[in-house]
Length: 97
Image 1 (cartoon, one colour):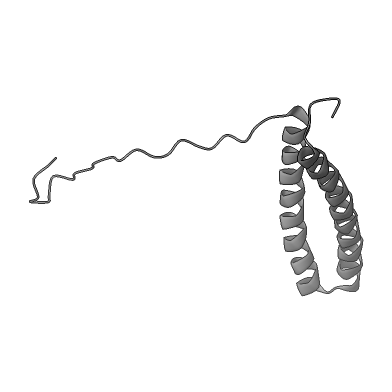
Image 2 (image 1 turned 60 degrees about the vertical axis):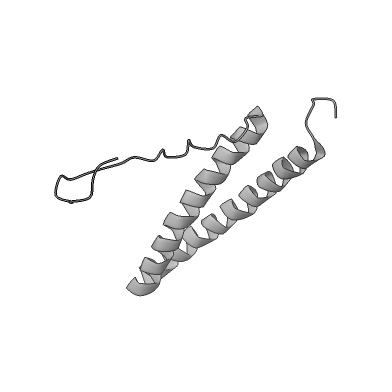
């Protein structure tokens, strides 16, 4: 590969772009349907579409962040593991460590 990317990274970038386009189109269709349901006075259907739109926009935002990380070549960084922390409230009769 000329830019040093593996085939796996290129496939992941391509898939992410295609997925984001399809997902964005689905969001546009949902917005159109939401407008129709509101004009028709169907509150329950509009509420369901609003909840779905909220989740869809959240997923699209997460995908955009992942795509940016892939394009910039960032590696995933795992959060540090929590250390063992002894906590005592002073009530227990067990001896402290």
